[in-house]
Image (tube, rainbow, N blue to C red; front, side, top):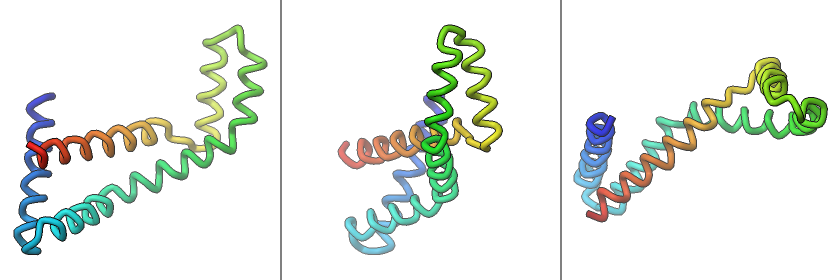
Amino acid sequence: MGGIWSSFVGLLEWLLVQSAIITGSATLGIVLFTIAARLVILPLTLTSLRSNRRMQELQPQIKELQRKHGKEPQKLQEETLRLYREYKINRPVVVCHCYCSCRSSLASIRRCIT
């Protein structure tokens, strides 16, 4: 996994350097790179935002499930997953988006600093 991640970070670093060379300015290159990166992850961001909004709307129903099945964790999990499926909430997308955004941002910053 380290090799794959290092390759990905290397690609991001190369793209960042190329955008700085093309624009002739490191600042403008970073801005251009950031806009391009945001456009690439826009579909994932929109899906994540929709799922988060639906999850907020479901909070009263989830609290009711917790009250009803509080002593049965297995049943609570089954009912919660059923509710997510019913309302088309894609929880892994939300988690993946947050993880990838944070991870790639930190990796780019770390490469620029060193």
